[in-house]
Amino acid sequence: MKPYRIIISGGGTGGHIFPAISIANTVRKRFPDSEILFVGAEDRMEMEKVPAAGYRIVGLPVSGFDRAHLLNNIRVVGRLFKSLQLAKKTIREFKPDIAVGVGGYASGPTLWMAASLGIPTLIQEQNSYAGVTNKLLAKKAGKICVAYEGMEKFFPADRIVVTGNPVRQDLEEALDKREEALRFFGLSPEKKTLLVVGGSLGARTINRSIQGDLDKLFASDVDVQVIWQTGRYYQEEAVKHLKAYRGMPVWCSDFITRMDYAYAAADLIISRAGASSISELCLLKKPVILVPSPNVAEDHQTKNAQALVDKGAAIMVADKEAEQNLVPTALQVIHDSARLETLSRNIAKLAHHQSAERIVDEIVKIIK
Image (tube, rainbow, N blue to C red; front, top):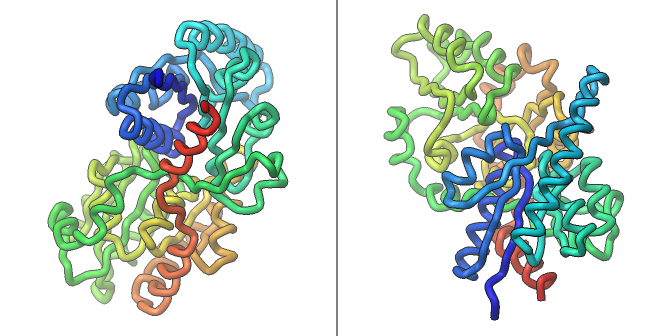
């Protein structure tokens, strides 16, 4: 059997990149001779993360449409045209058996070009609400792997497979290492731990909400410790605010290298409602307060969060109410053991195990 040749395209955020790498790792584990090439957007974080995971990547000059300044889109269209040409050249040279799209700017031109050159395609849609690009690409896709039920309203029903979103492989393995995890952050096993995650770049509202309510978090009658990941853009400001709280039980950094430990240590998590984060939280059975980002296409994070809230599997605080309500809600929930237990039980029911394996099964079926 000749080795499989697979293009995986997409990225832009960790939420697209980690599932893509997870799929690639699963292909490589099952078929060690296979050739995998990533196609990303040239100025986004995949250009750094994918080579770090040991894969080759080609960057396209593609960028998103600017809804606020329509004139800027003349340049965007120019970049899209260049990206289509470069995608065509890349596909012709690499000769893939299949092109897989995981969402993000680069997957549009790559899968569009692959389909028009007669290469089979597969889409992995991570959200409960499909974006415009994937709705277009789905018309020619062999299979659409989704994480939520009820996606027939966006895609042809006969081509949908519910696989869930692949997550980072190391996360589940660390769950029973709570004490070790707390030692890593220099925190106490006696206190409840609140984990605040703002994504790799940071979430302004979440950071502001924590900064504004440090008094409440560290009041003498509150027995809580905090792991606070600010994201790249907000670290400096957070450190400045924490100066007045020296000696308080808080670990703060722009990035958490051991996310597996962070999850293992946490009794309650505050997070954005990106599809990838939600999939991780379901697998890890973690109680969560979701603060959906209002700055995403079609407001899909609110829809992701609502899908969990409807099943009693998460609590949602709207972005515009977070500075007022987020910390008080967190403090109320973290001391309510019955509520934590219920949230944990309900979110666990929504987990999809072995998602990457199931997506690779579909890839193989299409190639064969």
